[in-house]
Image 1 (spheres, rainbow, N blue to C red):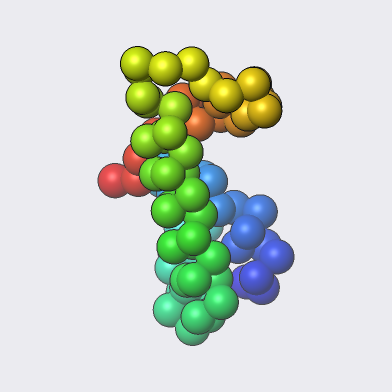
Image 2: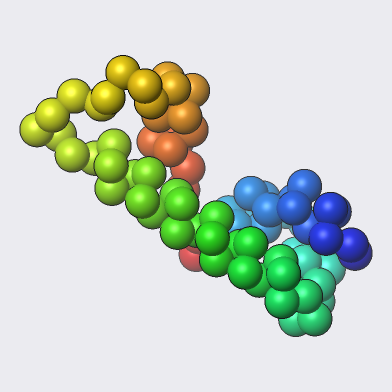
Amino acid sequence: MICREFIALLDIYRTRDAPDEQLRQCEQHLAVCASCRAYLDSYEKTIALGRAACLELDGPVPEEVPEDLIRALLTLRPPG
């Protein structure tokens, strides 16, 4: 697996919605690729920050936040 392939599978890897063989290939790639491990970490942190920002129920979401981003953040499941 190359980095581009891992990135294409990133979301289904995170949610564990990939076939076992793809998950195994992703794990093998992550074991040897520091760049993709860092990318995955950054991706996870971005999701967490986005959720935290969107879950503040006391105030409106700023107008400059795209609606599709809000929907995506609210529908993502945490890994595990």
